Image 1 (spheres, rainbow, N blue to C red):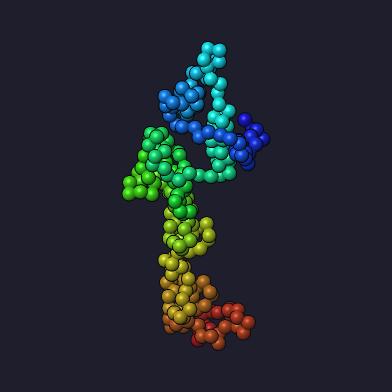
Image 2: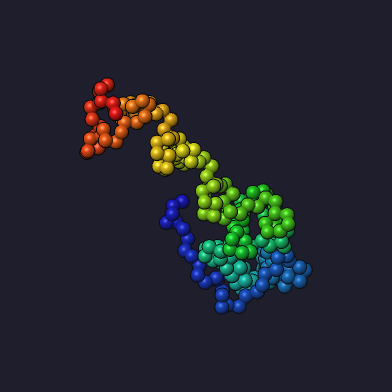
Length: 223
């Protein structure tokens, strides 16, 4: 089957303005004798018996009623409609099948059924087997209200964003208000910038070149 094989959408259910009968779910003795259709047994045998032998022709209103019910249901589905939970319907079919989807009473829920023969109400006290798809049961999305606290692997996220954690930042950068007091390896720092300590203290500022470059220091140029 291909995408362009999809059938036409039915904007108007069959016999919308025509005469039609309401088709009962179950046949009765009366419907059998009168030749009326029912959903459980269809058209009774009398409608399949020759008129010359006492048969009754099928009723056109029954055909209209049947086709109207079917096409109205098709139109609802084609229009994207979802049904809400119906206890009577659930009981009549023996419970909702696994993977059935129902609309919530409010617009904050779309319910997915995870078990067969499910009679429970997804919004009732016992909602076993139902999960709200709008609540992201598989945790696939981040919730705005959580401010990224729901990230499953924050370390990987930081790497992907090329940012550091608070701990990494504290160990990686110097605090301006410490004036170099938080340098962990001060002798190595002095060596790396090409300065020579004077009696264990930093080189005086007036020993630096005016353009910010360090002078070539020797053992005899200590301040």
